[in-house]
Structures are given as C-alpha cells and as structure tokens.
Image (cartoon, rainbow, N blue to C red; front, top):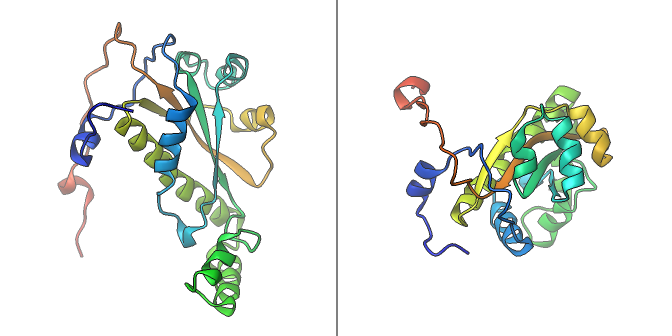
Length: 210
C-alpha cells in the first residue's frame, strides 16, 4: 500500500511508461491482487468483461516471452509481466453476465436473447468486428490496470512489440482469444533516468466539434 494516495489529476500527470525496472524489488501477490481488483471496475460492452490476465512471474517464463518480445530488457527486469487477453466470443450466450442481468432485474430473459442475437448478427458478425470487440474492451482494462498500479505506487509499461503467435504458443492460448498487449509491472530503477516526457496532442489538436 502506498503512503500517499494520488488524486486522479496527479495520478494521470505523473504516470509514465517506465522502461527501467529494479530487478531486486519484488511485487507481492497481495499488491498485485489489489491492483487487479481495482482495475476490473473498468467498463466493457454489456459488462461482458471479455478479458483475462496472465500474470507471468517466473524467470523461466519471462525469459521465454523476452525471446519473443524483441528481447526487451524490461521483460526480464520487471518482477511481473501481465499478458492482457481479449475474448472474441465474449458477447455470446455462455458468458454468465447474461444470467446475472436477468437475476438482478436489469433485463428480461427475452431481452437478453434479443441482445445476444443482435450482437452475433449485427454488431459482431465478422472476425474483424469480433477482434475489435475483444481488443477495445480489453484495452479499457489494460489502461485501468496501469492507473491502478500507479495509485498503489507501482510503475507500468505497456508493450505491443511481440510475436503474438509465439506468445499464444507459450501459454497455450486458444484461437478465439487475442493477446492485446503485455504490461510490465514493478518499481523504477533509481539508478536510471527517464527520458523527458514527449508532447501529447491537446484538445485543440484532436477534437473536432460538429
């Protein structure tokens, strides 16, 4: 637990994608659980939560990933490497969230069947749309994890530089599940210096009003 909790503005302004992790500082299972349990409050379509997280802690497995992730040193130096997975079938009927909607009175059984059918036939009828569903929703979780980590005093670095097919082989990930990104978690190596923060596009640059 961190001594001083950050408000969101300070959290967002101080969060960095840290390239240098201290390999001598472990990340406890309890703290990792706190981070994930806070992060899963992230939104998702229909509250489907079409995601899973692999927590890679062993040096052996991190070495395997390192070899398929452009040999990036942080994969080995960070005490925990997360693989954020997205389920391209997460909107379909086996997902228990549909039954929960009925149980809580948020939808009738007929409403649920209509939504599921609409999702399968209109919203996500193609592989491209299903992958977009999995990637967009699991990315919401990924960002939430990085903010939650910072809240608890833990640094993070997201990565998309890896061979997805090889990562899926290492962890026996099924075909309908994508590896959205990897996230290194740990503590900054104080012997190193972060590069200056690069400019972010502001409101004037990215927003178009209609």
